[in-house]
Length: 191
Image (cartoon, rainbow, N blue to C red; front, side, top):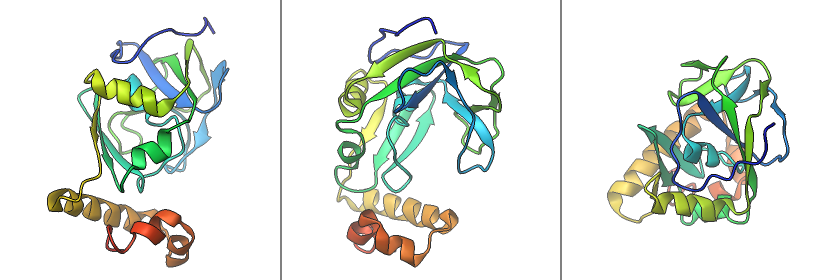
């Protein structure tokens, strides 16, 4: 590892590099792990800001994310979801070389994967993930859609969450144990 990277918000990805965020600091090598795809991979992405959005535990029932060009576009699934997920959380943003990574293996176009361990080139420690994401928004490097009671937004979120619930394999008992579903399942998401 060549050291801590002192880059700031708003920086765009460079060709040849990918980014991975983790709550674990000080890693010298990223190890493949099994995710929802059922295959052991190291996951990375070209956008630093998009990588930051994976720096704290979350799922598709907290925020929805896509990447348009290099710009992450995020939608809150319930009021203050971004703050709930990211405020006060720390992470490390790791830079890795893109050699050995493959595109098109997971169903999400911006995601790159590697089945082998990957050496870390640089690490940037993020002290408050929520503050950093807000800085990225101010720099125009991401678009954050706050939860809105407007009917068009509500319909979009309801449709997306219902679809994700259908393919997630969750059961009614899972809903009853998750405070997000207890609070928003029937009122906002129509579950």
